[in-house]
Every structure is written in structure tokens, then in C-alpha cells.
Image (cartoon, rainbow, N blue to C red; front, side):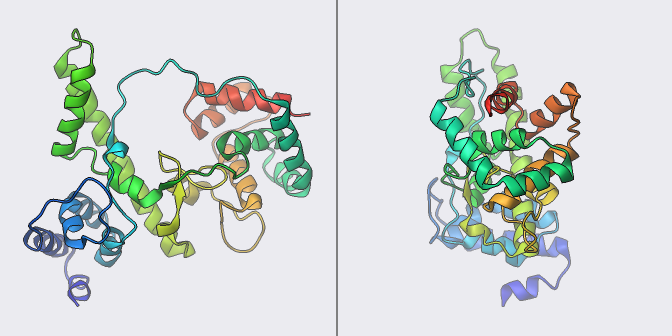
Amino acid sequence: MILSKINKVHPLIKVVSLSLICFFAIKQPISHNGNGSKKYQKLKFFKPVVDSLISRGIDSESVFQLINNNQTYFNEKYTKVNVVQQNIQPYPLTIESKSLKAIQEFIETNTVTLKSAEQKFEIPRKIVVSILWVETKFGDVLGTNHLLSVFLSMSMSSNPEIFNKNFNEIKQTANSSLNVDSLWNYMKKRANDKTAFAINELIALLKIRKRSGIDIFELFGSFSGAFGIPQFLPSSYLAYGFDGDGDGKVNLFNVSDAIYSVCNFLKQNGWKNNDSTACFNALFRYNRSKDYVARVLFIARKIP
């Protein structure tokens, strides 16, 4: 009843009404881990997210469903800001013979689809197959992180209490010669960017739910919020997802749709055969890591 009334009023009044509901109905703080059943506590804790989503035009009913769902939760591990440069190469330039055999079997099984996608988008099938192998080994390693909870948690990264806790943890382990003010400014910018990114991805998930009917509460994926065989972010699903099997839906857990979606992504991001710079840039936009690009190209060259 309350929601139906709120939805009929001016957006500004809607935000104020929701804020008052969150403020007065809740007395106890929420735990930093899963509390799907503590609905009012969750509303108070996630009030900054509620306000952001509604100010961006998301209807209050959808926001309440998102926050109040028993499966959504907060985990501070998703709010961490990495300030240490990692020296470990995450994508080694090696591949076992059994892996090449699995890749070859995938190509043989999906020859028709790969050939059709290659002709439509002019993306070499070996590149597409290499990406799908690196990302999820053709769907065998999809990730176990609850997507909505990943982005709900990320969206709290700039919350003062959470940010200060993360900052103090980093400060205690940082080099003593490091300028504290510079560290604070750097981490604050990263936290603000992370919050903005997460809000955009939450909005994308809600659009996916509305347009395609996908149960976004049942989506699981990577630590960074990518999902499906090609590991697309929700915003990438909206921008580049492609119906490869012609059933009228884009399902990134479907091999045909995954193949066509990867091709569409690379094509729209400037892939041009015989132009190494364009190819590198397209792959880099898929995953902003030079090591990742090197890994994909290495495997593609190894495929018979």
C-alpha cells in the first residue's frame, strides 16, 4: 500500500518518503554479512543506495524488492580498494596439451555456430574460442559470487564509515614514507569511482530484469560482477549481448549466444583484421590488462 502511494507522487517527495521510512522504522545497525531477513535494518543500511537508485529514475518498488530480497546481502570484501601493484602475472603464457584438446573438441562441436559468427562479424573463431576458454573454460568456471550482492556491496564503498575502515587498514600496512594525504585522496577517488560503477551496474541489472525477464536474483558470477560464459558485466550484456541461436532472448549461459556476443563486443570495439593495434585495443577493452590480451593471443596462436 505504501509503495503504491509513493509511486504516484513527485520523485523528490518519493525520495524523502523512502528516506523517512528507512530512518524511523529502524533502530539497530545491520551486520556486515548476510541479513536477508532483517528487511528494515537492510533498508537503513543501504539508504545511500536507495537514494541513488531512485534519484536515477528507478521506481521505488523495484528498489525495495532489490534490498528486501532474502538473497541480497552486504560483504565488505567487495568494497576494498587495491592500492598495491601486483607483480604476479595472472595470465601465464603456457597451455597444457589437455587444454588444447578440450579447445579443439569445443571447436568441432560448435563449428557451424563459430563459422556463422565469423562470417557475420569478421572475428576469427580462434580469438573467440580463446576468450571463452580464458574466461570460464567454456562455462565450467562461472563464479560463485551473487551478482546483486556484489554490486550492492560495491555501491557502499564511498560510505564514510566503510571507507574510513578500509583506509585505516591500508594505512597501517603501507610504507611509512607514503604521504598519508595522497593515499587518502587516491583511495577516496577510487572508492567514489567504485560506488558510481556499482550503481550503474545495479541499474543495468534492473533493466535486464525488465527487458528480458531474467531472474537477476539467481545470477552468480565473478568477484567483479561479470557473468555468463563470456563473463560480461550487466552493462556489457545490454550493450553487446547478441541472440545467437535466434530464440528471441540473449542468454549468456548459452554457447551460441556467448559466441555471437563476444564477436559483437569485439566488432563494436573496433576489431579489424590485419590491424594489430585495433585488435589489441578491442581485446584490451574486453579486459583492461595487457597480460590478458597476451594470454588470449597466445592461446589463439596455439590452436591447430
